[in-house]
Image 1 (cartoon, rainbow, N blue to C red):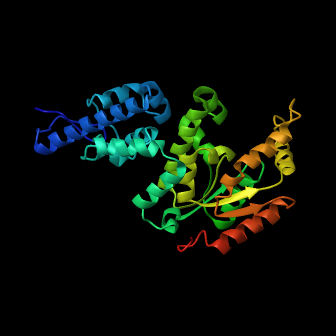
Image 2: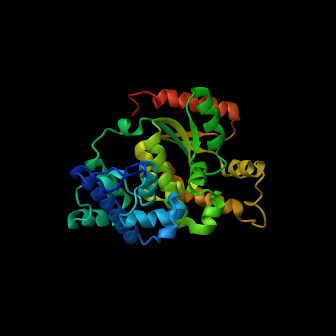
Image 3: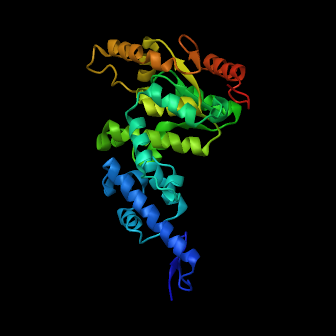
Length: 309
């Protein structure tokens, strides 16, 4: 008598080997083949995929061999670690057709402007629908994103999330350790995955992101499409003073050129931050005054209403 493994990973010794059972086994094999192919195309060792997704190497090996089942929750984590939607792993249509692969390769090598045009053609949804009631605060460290975001979330009664905290939860280690272990490339991959997960799970929220996210074109375009973005800015002097007030002396310790470097970073990123839908200048303002200004801006622009644009 055939034993059938269900989608909870339980064995049913009473399986009859029916056409439905055969379809389930074919699905398990198809998912395994796609996971293996996607991992190999990205050049990711199984151990690294395990670290990123939180799924054990043994479980991944069984999955890729088509010999084991996997819960929907764990499969979602594997899909996100591979930068794919779970539907891509499950669908019957061949995702490796030459046309699909060619389009994917062309998109990967395209400029951010071309990618944006392609996405607009393929996703004709109006921007206000894609952004829902999500607000994101961008800008350099020390501008007040986390402080104002948390306070605004409390006043408005909506969730406040820091993207770096999501990355830490996903990786199981502090961001500094993520960068030390996987480098900037590994951190940026986790950042993109965390942002995708937040978009999939939150329709209403305030998000604060690290200042360097704007330097990663694909991730920043994803952010701009799915959030009402606000550039929280201040003067270089206040940026530095606020960081030091948080107890971090690194920006100035043994580095007399730190202020000029900060100004240089601001200049280089200014054109990127200006892509945000709105700006909030906190220079010379108290936290309370900046908060009221932020709340007024959100209300005036209708970022939390159904017809926000």
